[in-house]
Length: 416
Image (cartoon, rainbow, N blue to C red; front, side):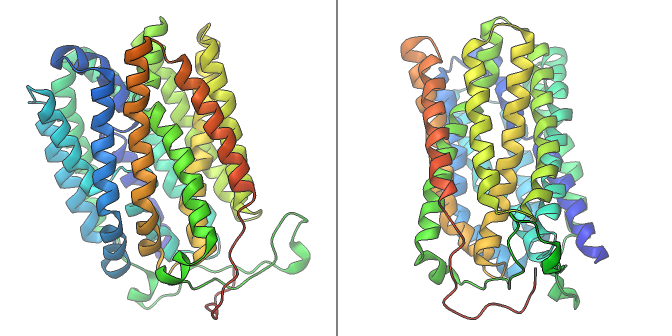
């Protein structure tokens, strides 16, 4: 199905450009913005919280809009508002202005974890090869990180953090808006097409593969009455809080440990490269084995990466920890995008994910300021990193026991 792959390519480019909007590259702004605007690490953490809480509060509405109208208009509007807010960041004079702009950006949900706007449309176009399609779309996040981390640091060093925000806003809008308007469609049925389907022969299945099945068709209310949805919510809350604790603080931690900002930006570009490669690998894998096993591997990767951060002894440890963290992120991105459609079907996917998104984004948002306050009180991130090891380890125990719910109603006649 040619047009399905056009959708995937377009959303990959959208994901690529969102990495210029203050996501992974935001850590590079922490020190220069914090010094000029006299913001503590705890307050800076609240900026990400404001962004995420806003996205969570609007997540259910956004999910319903995606189910009804698709991404063609939603994504360009989100990109335009986000870009205008980034331009506003280049003019802020007070900390409250910075917080307000991040809050407005959050309502758009364009670069929120889980990528609701860019992952739900892919899942609607693909049933078979869904993991592979999500992987190719998600790789845009990794490649965007590879490009925009060193570019962001170059811009900050050469023209200052204010003009860097302005330049990045123009870049992101010029990529996202025209591509989305021209190429994106809601779902294949709108064009008289069917979703991409494959049906492996039973004699081709390995011992760890699941047998061919019909795609489940769960409404949001039916999904909410299953224990599976609530256990998944608990898993993503644990992982979200832990990852939120790293969003703002990993980059300045390495810089303050004694590494140059440029070296750290290269290491985090390796982080993004690892995420891109693992997203592709994990996407292929989840088409073949239960997705929860990939989730466990992701959590264990986080544990090892954070453990290496406690050492922080030389450049090799920096690059190893960053790359391993990226690999774990890549696997987690696929799990986040894939598991909901795999367990509950694609028909009401946006609405179902919209139910869970407020809890997920709230947990991510709380992680950053709490980690910042621990740093402000102790002058160190050591307690934070040990906390993350415990959280990721606990999440791995939770997810390994969560299996696909058994439908109580007929499934749609779509073989996988």
